Length: 417
Image (cartoon, rainbow, N blue to C red; front, side, top):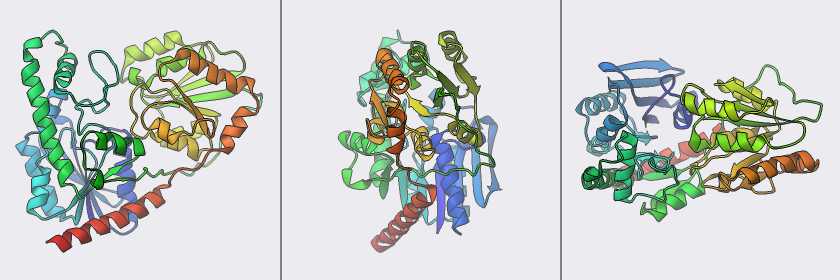
C-alpha cells in the first residue's frame, strides 16, 4: 500500500503526541514494506516545499512564513501556496489512502484534491480541534473547561487570545466566522471514510456534538518502547518517587500537584520533566511552590523518559482539561507503574480507580495530597495497584489494526467507483 499522512507539525520542527505518533506509525509501516510519505507545515521565512527521506519515509515539508494563531486559523479556509504544494505531493506520491492526523494550519481543501483523484481518506481525532479552535476545550478568558462550540463563546475566546477581550463589537463577526469554520471542518469529517478515536471518551464527545456515530471507531494508540542499554533502579530506602512528565503549562495542572506534594509527610520525591522554555513564568511559579524534595529534570528525549520511569514508583497526570488520550499513561503502564490522574476526560476511561491507579478531582489540592499520603501510609496500596497494571497496546498491534483498516477502506472505495 501507498499511505500518505497529513499532519500539522512533525519532528524535529515540533514534538508532541500527534507528531511522535505520526512518526512512529510511518516508520513502522515502512518497515513492513509499504510506501509511506508524510506532508506537514513548518514555520520558516519565505515560501518553500522540500522533501527528504527518513528511515524509509518520504517527508514533504511546506512553509509559508511564520504562522501565528490568527494565520493558522485563516489557513483552514484558504492558502493557495500550501494547497498547491499538497497537490504536488499527492501527484508525485500517488497514495492509495490518505491518513489525516491533523489539519491545524493547513487548508481544508485537501478533501477536494482527494475527491478529484478518487483517493479515500481516514482521520484520527487526536484532540477537539475539529470543533474547537483552541483544540483543548478550554476558554481563553477564564481557563474553564468548555463543553463544546457555542459560537458567541468561541468569539469571546478569540478576543481573549488576541489580547483584546474588551473589543465586544467584533463578537458577531467572530461568531459568524467560527460557525463558518465549523461548517468547513464538519464537511471534512463527514467525507472521511473512517474517523479514529483513541479513547471511548473522544468517541462519545464527538458523537454528542453531531459527528456521525457510524463513522467512528475506537482504536487506542500503540506504544513503541525503546530498548535500554541499562536499567536504572528505584531507591532501596523506602522513598516513594512520584513523576510528572509532559507539558509545563497551567492546563496540565502541575501547580496543583506541586502544591499538594508540599504538604505530604514521609520519604517521598517528586520528579518533574518538561520543556521549561515554553512558559517560563509558569515554571518560575512551580519552582517557587516546590519544596527541596522536588526535582526539575528539564526536557527529556524518549530514552530519557524511559530511564526516568524505571527509577520512579508512581506517575501523576493532574490535568485540568479533557485529555484525549495521554501517552504518559501508556508509558506508565508499559513500565508497570500505577497512575494518579484527574477524573476528567479520557483519563477517567484509561485509569481504573483502585485497580491500576487512583482517580481524583481535578484541581483539588487536598484530595491530591491525601492520595499521595495514602501511598506513603498504606504499605500494601502501591504493590496492589502495581499488580493491577495491564500493558497498553503495542505499536506492532496498533499497526496491524491500521493495515487492516487501510485495506478495508481502499477496497470499499474501489467497489463504489
